[in-house]
Image (cartoon, rainbow, N blue to C red; front, side):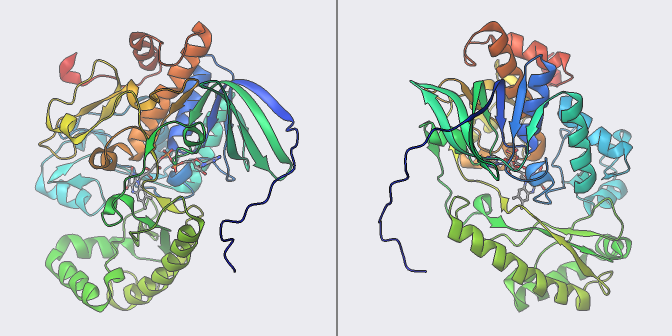
Amino acid sequence: MRSGNGETIREPERSIPVYGSTEVLVVGGGPAGVCAAIAAARAGAEVTLVERYGCLGGLSTGGLVIWIDRMTDWEGRLVVGGIGKEITDACAAEKALIGPPPEQWGSKDPKLAAYWGVRTAGHRGIVNFSPTIDPEVLKLILNDMVRAAKVNVLLHSWAVATLCRENKVTGVIFESKEGRFAIKADITIDCSGDGDIFAKAGAVFENDFDGVSAHARLNTSFRFGNVDMRRYLDFRMIHPEQYSTLMREASHEDEWLTNTAFVTPNDTIALFLTPKFSGYSALKVDDLTEVEFRSRDVMRQVLAWYRTRMPGFERAWIHDTASQVGTRHSRRLRGIECVSSKVWRTDGSSVNSIGLCPGLSPEFPTLEIPYGVLLPERIDGVLAAGRNLSCDTTSHAALREIPECWVMGHAAGVGAALAVHSKQTVRSVPIVEIQSELERQGAIVRRQERK
Ligand SMILES: Cc1cc2nc3c(=O)[nH]c(=O)nc-3n(C[C@H](O)[C@H](O)[C@H](O)COP(=O)(O)OP(=O)(O)OC[C@H]3O[C@@H](n4cnc5c(N)ncnc54)[C@H](O)[C@@H]3O)c2cc1C
């Protein structure tokens, strides 16, 4: 294709039909967005959720990011409750979850830690609740939950512009097969993951990824089927040195072959959250396109190598590839508060806590996530929850994880609903009221030792 060379064309001016009005509008139906919508609806608000793809769950379904990071602290205490815990409980009830039972959380028993270690639920010799779930069952569960909460859901609807009056977001414009429509909203919650809405509203944001670190890598994840996972996991647990040798040999053959196969709730399916490509932007169409092509090329290579070398994979097939490109990082809001690595290194507490994030390692405290990371510095009428929160790049690695996105979404939904009902701005709702509604909805807001 020949380059546009900066040429522009003028679109004819047109009137946009208003699709509807809503008290709370959530853009993006990923982990943060679904929790925000359910929480706001449970707090009594009229809620509409707009999602560009055909299912709910964002990366946790469409991206095949089905390994949910730690929901317990290093002592084994549950730190993520509320809607997030309801989701994992529902997955467990449908036999669509693999993870240690509560009595094993925090255990340092070497046998248990080794068993769960190869099942992505044992780290630093400690068993923790970081389950893996089935994405198709999760889609069904999320449908059930938004329906039960009476959230109006619009799938296949891509928010493309933000409506603003003075310094306040008043809704969005979305594109669909039916055309272009406006939705008017008292409060909008940006759960697009990429900060699409606050960026278009002119909020200040960061996208200072360094292009090299794992932090900003992109990929399309994939799964292999017809695998004997028990054999593979036993091999890794019983012969860790042989497994390391095999992986070293793979890295000498080709750097992209060193992909670890992760467990799934199905004994015959292996998950690959790789290959991790650096130097691409999740906001550039050319980059996204190249990542999709390269990821699938690597997948083909990995399949051939695993079939010939890795115990349990002799008859493996491609089960599926993610329908949503795996983006770890794009835009981060500059909020009225910002979690930095300094906060992690010190006490990690906050009077404005809306939920918890377990310490990066046993040396770090459990973090109390402050409400201000969801609030833009200047613009009103909008909150941002999920991986587009306000934090530095180091803290982002922990705060972008799915349990934390559930937690932030839950809090944003409650903050928005309370603001609508009390006719206040989202930034002036008293934090104690948000904390009390969150607790009423089953969330864990404060660290246990602080009670
Ligand atoms: C490869 C990879 C591995 C990872 N590993 C783990 C892991 O092991 N454990 C863990 O807990 N986390 C992991 N993460 C992180 C985690 O998956 C994400 O940070 C998390 O899903 C972010 O949730 P979110 O709701 O903020 O955004 P997303 O999950 O990205 O959801 C955003 C939603 O908004 C929609 N959307 C976007 N823009 C628009 C728009 N303009 N209009 C309408 N809809 C829109 C999207 O379609 C999507 O559904 C990983 C991430 C990646 C990429």
